[in-house]
Length: 460
Ligand code: 5AD
Ligand code: SF4
Image (tube, rainbow, N blue to C red):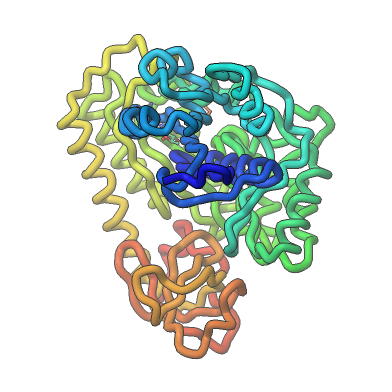
């Protein structure tokens, strides 16, 4: 049972890193208000779901969670139930109607006011707060988990309007944060032991545009690259149209910046890309890849792929597969198209049958994994710089970390616990299609980034 007097919060987070980061901020605000975090509904006086709307599957999980809380709330009238994040923003009416036992519906810009909203519940039956606000000038002290990485949002929202995507609706227009604030948050994170910082934004490479004073992600990287104690600086996610030469050169020249780009292509057919509203063609994407690998040799390029977008034919899908072969992505997240109400594509017929979506999804994933297996095999004998994150979850005789790009590397633990939280040279001596295995090496790394065609041509 819940601690009747104590303020305790159980929070479950769905979706992307931005949500993970919002959860950390809300936990910090709640901690200031006297809440402690617990790891079960039973022990909680407040249950929060930080939700995602990108695909219906993520929303369905939350609907299920809320259904199962209904009888619990009947037993424990004082239990507070809140929904925050994208689903709260997108579907507030639906949530309140279908789940009247929900006390709080808190939108993507309002969650920072959680303690005040909870206070309102002392007078009001139900509180719904979903206005978009301008809080990007606030200091977002976050309550971070211990560990190597700290997420730091540099912008919110998105000014693109890709026709499958709910994000512009749930997170509003693009808003960049002040670089001074960001720098001070990065310094604080490093002082608190986070040796890696990941800058977050829906289109992070557009950072600075809305500030209108020449601020850019490239300039921010140069500035943060000066911070002593910071081992790795990452950023996600990028739109191909916003990746400037200046940014690619900054990634190349800043030694703390990971040689890693997550730049979703989404599809390889120019016809479908036009329907998706992506603002580039297949050729445009290939030009970007060529430019990235020329200006920043070794940079790893990861993609997201959507299969089964309305009207996608076998020929369109074959073009996606051939794009994957042409580019040789360093990683691919593959999703089956899920129609989202209120998006541009909502009115198009969802005409690719579910089983065909599944077959295409598996084919794309299979191709990615076989390409990865081959590429990882070629890395045997190379020495990579690996930021060791901790003990491997699946084997406590091993340490796990990430390469200069973002490859998952595991090395023997014995005698090397002092490597945790540091970048160390690891000689690769084995691999599967998902993981590289290696041992601590006493020499400088032989490769900085492992991505790209130049590397593939190396005869090792
Ligand atoms: N259906 C399937 N996948 C989607 N994504 C975004 N919207 C949808 C949708 N409606 C994918 C895109 C995006 C990633 C975060 O989720 O590939 O890059
Ligand atoms: Fe969605 Fe497109 Fe914006 Fe990415 S760029 S968040 S896919 S609208």
